Length: 110
Image (cartoon, rainbow, N blue to C red; front, top):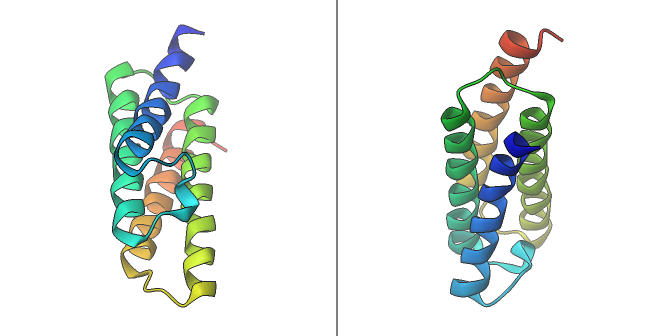
């Protein structure tokens, strides 16, 4: 339970930043640069919490990464539907998928 708390902290901090800076609790209504800042804070803090624990990667880590990628994919589809430039988000998602495949292959043995 205590280990799972460390995985929740990045989500709490990034949503607090979202609420304090942008006065919103919905990341999908943010414009491009603001969403990318929010998304980078979330990714950076999540990976830092994984490295701070420095234990084997658990299913909770895998699901947390999946939720972060799902958030990015939803925003990618919204941006594509609205005709906005989504190049940086695509690059970030590709890098995340590469990291997810490495983690899945080396730690989870699925």
